[in-house]
Length: 252
Image (cartoon, rainbow, N blue to C red; front, side, top):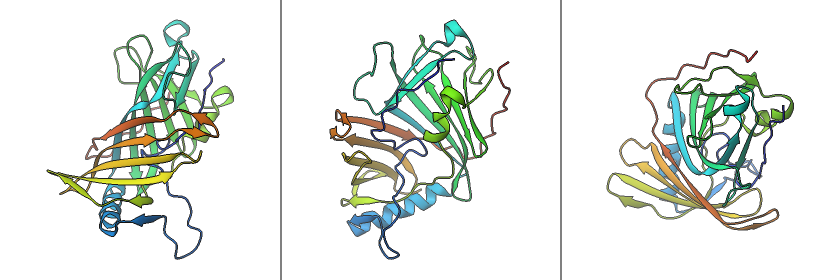
């Protein structure tokens, strides 16, 4: 098995929820947000409303790259998953759409799946992330179900480190004044990612339900490590009922 990743820790906003998690406050009274007070208050309401949902579904575009060998090597064939690159990391990789389906309990993730789809030449790959262990597998051709699962161990042990459960949406960054566009309220915030790059995030929130409907994220160029400026987006379409956890049948 030579399954591997080509990880670029450029902006790991979505390894857990679709929005970056807030860093720990330095003091008891310090909060990780600033800027326009009305925007902060509106955003915090949307965060609380979203965390109360039984399930969150985000479709991310323009962030992940995927290659796999499942068509030739079968259900345990190798794959490579990259993120945070403005252009393809290697010639054989294809831009992948990532769909996060997240089960929420008590305002936090209890488990989730991430399905990566990259066109007809590459088998869709799915990760299943749980508190007790993580799994990966390929969707059966013509189906939305994984045929069999493999533990995220050995050469795929990085999955359990980069995709974890227990997080929730949080509020942080410097917020600009709210912008209303019909039934949507646009909230823009800026912050610095783990590589020191400036990030500008604009979230679209339904004015009535106070639920997120999508986001556009722009990441500036970074020098340590070096990577180009890039952008990506996500669309949120949250189901109203809790999802059923996948049934795990391990590959033989």
